[in-house]
Length: 141
Image 1 (cartoon, one colour):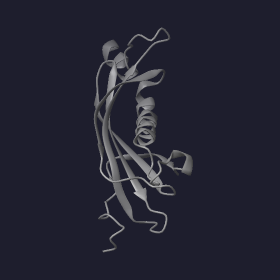
Image 2 (cartoon, rainbow, N blue to C red; image 1 turned 90 degrees about the vertical axis):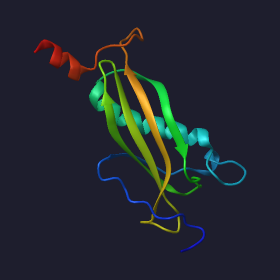
Image 3 (cartoon, rainbow, N blue to C red; image 1 turned 60 degrees about the vertical axis):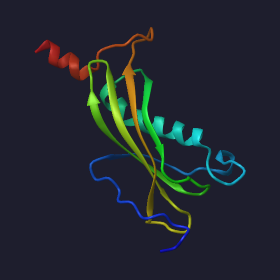
Image 4 (cartoon, helix red, strand yellow; image 1 turned 180 degrees about the vertical axis):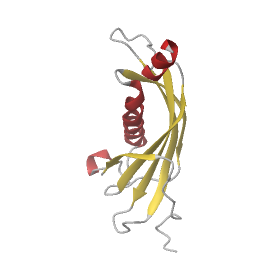
């Protein structure tokens, strides 16, 4: 095995591919690794893509329940974000989000770089929690 490569990860078949992004030099620290805050922001955006399908309107991140950095992300990596709904509550939705990097010189070789569990809350125009539409349907039955 090439010492530069971490063990290859299998892409999750039970998660939806929600986003791909290419980090740029402006996103890196002095060592050439991407800032953790940049990775966290991308994971939050990726999770919100899937959450939006359920929430159908405004939402806000209410909790980062878990966030694990497994491997560094580097300038030039193609980072794919996969998400899966863990739980839908009355006003909130919790998702599992995983990020997988394809290194510049090793396309097709995926390394899991981050995993997170994030909760979003559906909000109205005044910023107050509102019922997620799937629950409105159940309440009228």
